[in-house]
Image 1 (cartoon, rainbow, N blue to C red):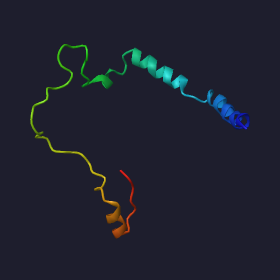
Image 2 (image 1 turned 90 degrees about the vertical axis):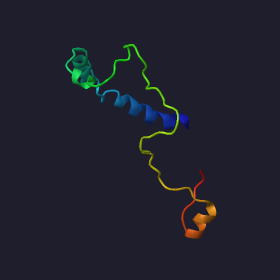
Image 3 (image 1 turned 60 degrees about the vertical axis):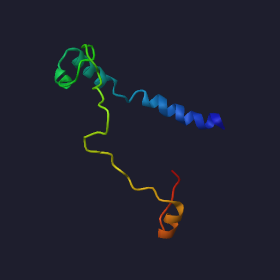
Image 4 (image 1 turned 180 degrees about the vertical axis):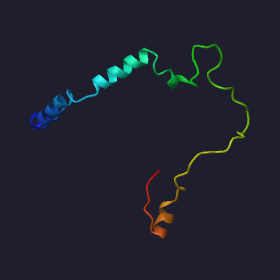
Length: 90
């Protein structure tokens, strides 16, 4: 049974070997190596420069706005049943 189910998968994978993006990827790699896309590097920090890569952490609560998005508050199973809502663990 395993062999019968494996044969179509293997055939599909071998067919997919010839429909790939190797030529396009190779052309892009040559352009990158020839420095024709240096604009992509603008604003990127060079990690080889001396100095800390992470800004120092100040003690205490953050003064920045909390941008954490909540997907909904957690409800108990009883509260969900009372409102006719689906309940899930976690």
